[in-house]
Length: 383
Ligand SMILES: Cc1cc2nc3c(=O)[nH]c(=O)nc-3n(C[C@H](O)[C@H](O)[C@H](O)COP(=O)(O)O)c2cc1C
Image (cartoon, rainbow, N blue to C red; front, top):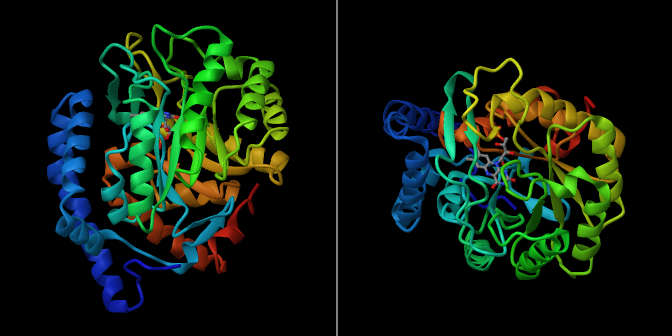
């Protein structure tokens, strides 16, 4: 399956290590300084604009691949029937409208999650959407699912799916967050509309039932009966793709297990653990900064949740581990705790896009050190 820039000689390997370090240096000294000089909302929009433009320049994408892509057979894995060059991907939220696939594909991401996207185009919450918390390597996120709507976003995702040869595409579907939001049945139909649009047009579908920043709240995780009604409706839509469900981080285990028991009775292949951190205990965050926290504040709870879900539901659900993945050690811990694939976003903002390469190289080394011949063998060994 390996078709990219394979590390098949010591010379290439050394070149890749050096060029990745050069890229990291450039990000820290130039790009990050420029982005962090802007307000976070402006920086996010500028980064997306830049990547959308850069992605159309084929020689630039070629150069990016030569500089930072690292391909290693020990990372190749098939999860939920989907073959991945590596199990590391962008989590939902950064690429809401599907502008980044060309850059992420060239950088060597195993997959990306586009969205979350909603049945109607959605303006999102009033600005600001983002605040930085550099001391915690975290962002306060209050975007409220702003996106162009699933009709457009899924069309773009399908195009990327057919043109990005090596990266797998997942689309995250959420409920529209606008003034037309109605009762529970309206919410269920909203998800169904987007799912009908997504059928057969990506590798994976992720259903986001845990956005902490919407006017309708979280009715599908507050009451297991509501979750059951939603997935009964989604089950009725035939689809070839596997489905992940993006879960909340801040439930008691008893509440969480009730939700998993419901999902276990439906056509759901995996769970994405987890969404943003709502608990600000011990953290110095201004009260008027509304939203959930990304990055480091998610790490410990997410690690524990991955291990517990693997222990108690390992045979039933594939786990996508998300939350506070900054280093290869962080990613490897998620895998050893039970994650078959790993997603991240905050580390890209704080450390740079070449962090995908550092994580891939580092995890490959750790796997070899521990005597594994493939990443799939390490899944859940510590759970
Ligand atoms: C800017 C930003 C936007 C996000 N938007 C979404 C979203 O639309 N849907 C979703 O399921 N999660 C969203 N999230 C949550 C992330 O997918 C992820 O669960 C969380 O940030 C923890 O991962 P991290 O520690 O790597 O940031 C967002 C996170 C960030 C930082």
